[in-house]
Structure formats: C-alpha cells, structure tokens
Image 1: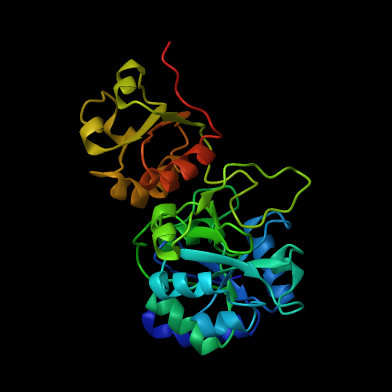
Image 2: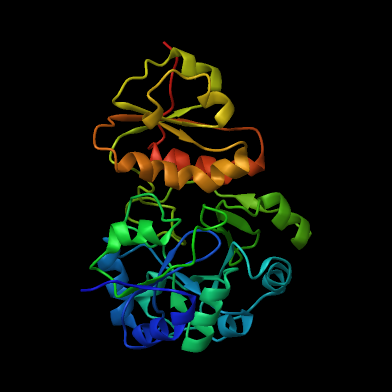
Length: 334
C-alpha cells in the first residue's frame, strides 16, 4: 500500500480515504493520531492491525465538537459541560457512559464507557467536520514505541500500512492528552497530561483523584495507556532522579543521555549520544518522545539515561510516560 502525505490544502482527499474505510493519520496539539471512522468496525479493527495494538485496549473517539460527542454519549453530565467550556478544544479527554449500540465494541473494548476528545488543531477539526463522523485517534505509531510528534515519525512506523498522513508539522505539547473519568462518583485522572488535576479541580469545584492502580492481565482498561507497555525504544531506558547522579555514570559510545541543557553541559559523553530536552519542564514534555525516537534509530546505543523530575503536579505527565518507557527502572547510586 502506498502511504500518501497530505498538506493542508488536501484535506478533502484525506476525507475521501476515511469515508472509503481507509486509515489516515492526523495531527493534534499533543501527538499524531491514527484515524478511522469510529462507527466502522472493520476500519477500527484495521487500526489495531496497523499498530499491532492489543484488541482489549479501548480507543479514544475524536470529535469536532461537543454536539458530535452528544450523538454517542449516553448523557453529558454537568461536570463534562464545565470542562468542555473551559478546556475544549484542547488536550483533555472525557470518559463518559456510551449510548448503547452507538459504537462498535472494537472501540469501547466491550465496556459501557468511552473516551471523547476534541483536539485543538484546525486541520483535524476540518477533517472530522467534513467527514461528518467521529474518528478513533490512538497515537499513530507501532504499539509500545514512542508516540509520534511529526508526520515523519508516523511515516517511519506505518509506511505501507496506512493510506495517508496529514502533515501538520511538529506538535505543540508532545505528550498525550489528560484523560479524566467522569463515569464515577469522584472524578479521577486516568492518564496525566498537560492539564493537571489541580486545574481540573479548580474548574469543577470538587476534588479530582489521580489513578495510581494497575490494571490486571484479566481486566479491560477503561482508557488507553493504563495496562500495556508504552513509549519504549529498543535500548533499555533508565530514569535518573537526581541530576547530580549523572556524574556517577560512565558514558561511552553505547550510552545515550537525555537531559536539560544545563545538565547536558556537565556530562562528558559523545555529542551524538546527547539529546537535549530543552531549557525547562515544558520543553522536556515537548521533546521526550522525539528523544526516545532519536535513540531508537541509533542501533549502537545499548542504554539510555533520562533525567527525571519530581515535586509537583506539572511533572506527572512527563514522569508517567518516562516511567513506562523505562519499565519503572531508576538509576541507583552504587
């Protein structure tokens, strides 16, 4: 299969492919998503096949606006309306009860809930609005690999497996959206993102919990990113919690390092084995997946050390992704 790259002026061509049941990757402000009409079960199953994604991992439904979401949500509670008014379009995904038989089980994982997202990207908004149907939107990468933040990342992973990619340039945020579960008594963040629990709590006027549990092998996760290994390059990743510990590590030509500029300047390692996370945490959020992909393409790299952060809700999203990429492995000083 030929994978076509579409520019902003070729949205209609991408719409035709989706309408015909094909798969098209699309940009958002977070990462690139892999689109198929959410009501087309055959196309949705094609998304799982293209990504190599486990079939019990439910998909996010990407909509152009709240009106489209209301066609598939069993109800839109007042909590959801408050968050939509404040954060949509934007990097926030809402888990709600789904209207029975409105979406195939390949989307919901057989659950009575589904996650809805309205991204802050004009190309994708126009795509869905012209299509007239919501699309599923998991990250457009090979399952378990770092999420894509450029069209080139998507092409690297899915060339020949999908019909098209809409090139919207590099994404702004670089980490996937916050997912909040509104199907429970007390709202709970299932996946941290740019929008923090504190910000959500301020808008809702009530406490918002943070999920810290793990999904068992027998259970279907309520949202993406809760059960399976994610974001991992081929070489093992190690989190360095205290930047001072970089001085204890023996860097050589087989070792990669990802850190803020201030720390990289102190590290004696081959320049091609250094990857800058930028100046601050916001930059690090934006650059994390690009760095993991950078080293995934360097076959001589056998170990990657990555700077960790702690101490505030703002670090939750970064550390959530990094800990999964590292399978929970943290550097211990001897």
